[in-house]
Image (cartoon, rainbow, N blue to C red; front, side, top):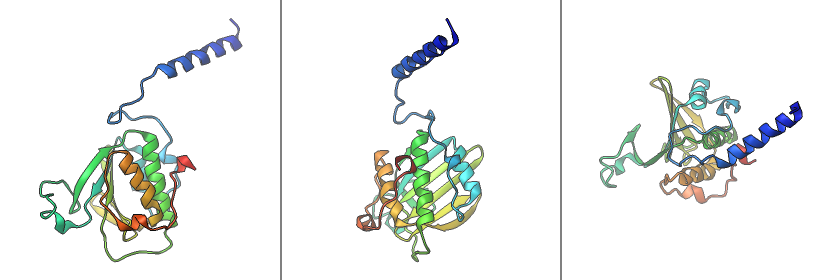
Length: 199
């Protein structure tokens, strides 16, 4: 068999193998290959150290949080996990690298799109936790007040974000089975960012 025929045979064998592979389970802990967060351009105001953890994370979780800390007792959330004082309503592990990439690409696009708009409150409804080795990054996101809090190594950095990232990020959350607390601003027409993989 000449080299050309051998290459064609190997290509055909690879195609057959691909067709018989099982799709990963939704809640599988196995990381599914896909586009790399490491290839994304990091916004100037987003900490590079946090980006490196997001890019190399062996664990990646998303959370829906209740934006009002004083609702803990009233809302039957007394036993709920707390993230920086905010009750966790639901959460999911994200193993698909392409979905992780979409989350971070929308987050970064939202940071880049903010031109100085900000509020005086902080009522986060979305959160991300990424772990890589001994490093953990937690990102609390408040679209209502155009702000995110990036937490790492006991330090917190506030970064502005645009509401145009709210709808696509909320859709990713809901597709993962994480229901975000109702927010009126999601009905406002402020444009919408698409995940980089869908552009």
